[in-house]
Length: 287
Image (tube, rainbow, N blue to C red; front, side, top):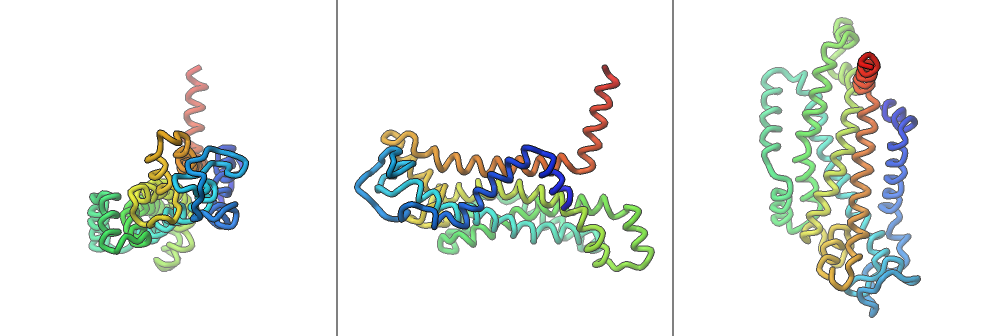
């Protein structure tokens, strides 16, 4: 995980991404308190543009748009985080252990992950949410299960590359158990690619969550969410053409920051740095 800290110190893009994500985290934690108005309170000023009283205007029911955006951050982002955590637990740990479970256990896990890869995210989430009564948590757990193969393949690939490393073989010769090898020697190296996958997956999860909420699945109105606000605002595009901009920008900026952070961490790994140095030397020699 020290690679992550080094990436943040040396990469300006990573630093900007962290600032954006910290702001989003503040909105998630304190958004409801920061809202200047009750996000559910209706008023007579319908589809009003930005003003001193309502900085981002009002929606079709006269509710303050800024207040709804702030209050809706919690459900929108935490749903994506929940799906990522479920995927990481169900994918990264089995992927790491699959290398040490023997041929039968390895084969079973690989076939299970192949089956999960064949399932479409949105359709399965909609089906589960419908069966579970439209709740957000069942849908997010389902999305997390479908994210598991991504973490499985990444952690398994990294573990396979480390299994025959000199220090790992030396630890085996000195009698270290499998559990000790995984915890003390393998996990530290696998943590960085898993962190990269977690950042990318959280961005993808936010898009999936917003899509479900856009369709009215998971969170019932009038509870505010970014995807739900975007769907409502698009119905009144002719009267308020700028209304969908605010929730759309929040979604895009958050997803973009997560992806840029993942790229920055990936580029600072030893393999990426050595590849960059080889390309630089090749360019110098070519000139």
